[in-house]
Amino acid sequence: MSVTREMMKVMKLEELKPQIGKEVRVGDESVALFRLSNGEVRAVSNRCPHKNGPLAEGIVSGEFVFCPLHDWKISLTTGEVQKPDDGCIQTYETAVIDGYVYIGGLKEHEKHHSDR
Image (cartoon, rainbow, N blue to C red; front, side, top):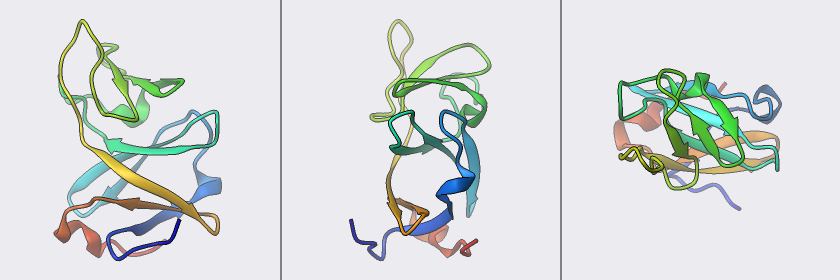
Protein backbone atom coordinates (compact mmCIF):
# COMPACT_ATOMS: atom_id res chain seq x y z
CA MET A 1 0.00 0.00 0.00
CA SER A 2 1.33 3.42 -0.83
CA VAL A 3 1.13 6.41 1.46
CA THR A 4 -1.21 9.15 0.32
CA ARG A 5 -1.43 12.74 1.49
CA GLU A 6 -4.26 11.67 3.78
CA MET A 7 -2.06 9.27 5.77
CA MET A 8 0.48 10.24 8.38
CA LYS A 9 3.27 8.41 10.17
CA VAL A 10 2.56 8.03 13.90
CA MET A 11 5.04 5.51 15.31
CA LYS A 12 7.46 2.65 14.68
CA LEU A 13 5.76 -0.73 14.37
CA GLU A 14 8.22 -2.24 16.89
CA GLU A 15 6.81 0.14 19.55
CA LEU A 16 3.37 -1.45 19.15
CA LYS A 17 3.37 -4.75 21.02
CA PRO A 18 0.87 -7.44 19.92
CA GLN A 19 -2.49 -7.28 21.72
CA ILE A 20 -1.42 -4.28 23.83
CA GLY A 21 -3.10 -0.96 23.04
CA LYS A 22 -1.17 2.27 22.65
CA GLU A 23 -2.58 5.79 22.74
CA VAL A 24 -1.27 8.32 20.23
CA ARG A 25 -2.27 11.97 20.19
CA VAL A 26 -2.97 13.45 16.79
CA GLY A 27 -3.89 17.10 17.14
CA ASP A 28 -6.70 17.14 19.67
CA GLU A 29 -7.71 13.56 18.88
CA SER A 30 -6.81 10.58 21.08
CA VAL A 31 -6.38 7.47 18.91
CA ALA A 32 -5.97 3.91 20.19
CA LEU A 33 -3.65 1.71 18.13
CA PHE A 34 -3.68 -2.08 18.34
CA ARG A 35 -1.49 -4.75 16.77
CA LEU A 36 -3.60 -7.90 16.55
CA SER A 37 -2.23 -11.40 17.09
CA ASN A 38 -2.33 -11.92 13.30
CA GLY A 39 -0.05 -8.87 12.84
CA GLU A 40 -2.70 -6.52 11.47
CA VAL A 41 -2.82 -2.99 12.90
CA ARG A 42 -6.09 -1.26 13.80
CA ALA A 43 -6.77 2.33 14.86
CA VAL A 44 -9.92 3.59 16.58
CA SER A 45 -11.03 6.50 18.71
CA ASN A 46 -9.59 6.02 22.20
CA ARG A 47 -12.90 6.78 23.93
CA CYS A 48 -15.65 4.24 24.61
CA PRO A 49 -19.08 5.68 23.70
CA HIS A 50 -20.49 4.59 27.07
CA LYS A 51 -18.46 6.49 29.70
CA ASN A 52 -15.40 7.62 27.69
CA GLY A 53 -13.26 4.74 28.93
CA PRO A 54 -9.68 4.70 27.54
CA LEU A 55 -9.83 1.88 24.98
CA ALA A 56 -6.02 1.73 24.60
CA GLU A 57 -6.04 0.30 28.14
CA GLY A 58 -8.63 -2.35 27.26
CA ILE A 59 -8.16 -6.08 26.76
CA VAL A 60 -7.82 -7.26 23.15
CA SER A 61 -9.39 -10.54 22.06
CA GLY A 62 -9.33 -11.40 18.37
CA GLU A 63 -10.55 -8.30 16.52
CA PHE A 64 -12.29 -6.80 19.56
CA VAL A 65 -11.31 -4.59 22.47
CA PHE A 66 -13.07 -4.67 25.83
CA CYS A 67 -13.45 -1.29 27.52
CA PRO A 68 -11.57 -1.28 30.84
CA LEU A 69 -14.40 0.55 32.65
CA HIS A 70 -17.51 -1.53 31.99
CA ASP A 71 -16.36 -4.33 29.65
CA TRP A 72 -18.15 -3.11 26.53
CA LYS A 73 -17.03 -5.23 23.55
CA ILE A 74 -16.11 -3.09 20.52
CA SER A 75 -15.07 -4.22 17.03
CA LEU A 76 -11.66 -2.91 16.01
CA THR A 77 -12.69 -3.37 12.36
CA THR A 78 -16.08 -1.62 12.24
CA GLY A 79 -16.09 0.36 15.50
CA GLU A 80 -19.46 -1.12 16.41
CA VAL A 81 -20.30 -1.93 20.01
CA GLN A 82 -21.49 -5.52 20.31
CA LYS A 83 -24.95 -6.46 21.62
CA PRO A 84 -26.58 -6.19 24.07
CA ASP A 85 -24.89 -2.77 24.29
CA ASP A 86 -25.22 -0.19 21.53
CA GLY A 87 -22.97 2.46 19.98
CA CYS A 88 -20.13 3.04 17.56
CA ILE A 89 -16.68 4.65 17.57
CA GLN A 90 -14.56 6.18 14.82
CA THR A 91 -12.21 3.81 12.99
CA TYR A 92 -9.19 4.90 10.96
CA GLU A 93 -7.41 3.39 7.98
CA THR A 94 -3.97 1.99 8.84
CA ALA A 95 -0.90 0.94 6.89
CA VAL A 96 2.51 -0.40 7.84
CA ILE A 97 5.24 0.81 5.51
CA ASP A 98 8.98 0.38 6.02
CA GLY A 99 8.50 -0.44 9.70
CA TYR A 100 6.26 2.55 10.49
CA VAL A 101 2.54 2.73 11.30
CA TYR A 102 0.48 5.24 9.33
CA ILE A 103 -3.07 6.39 10.08
CA GLY A 104 -5.52 7.76 7.53
CA GLY A 105 -8.95 9.35 7.70
CA LEU A 106 -7.92 12.10 10.12
CA LYS A 107 -9.58 15.49 10.19
CA GLU A 108 -7.66 18.16 8.28
CA HIS A 109 -6.49 20.03 11.42
CA GLU A 110 -5.15 16.78 12.93
CA LYS A 111 -2.72 16.14 10.08
CA HIS A 112 -0.13 18.55 11.45
CA HIS A 113 1.30 15.96 13.87
CA SER A 114 5.08 15.73 13.65
CA ASP A 115 6.78 12.45 12.76
CA ARG A 116 8.45 10.58 15.57
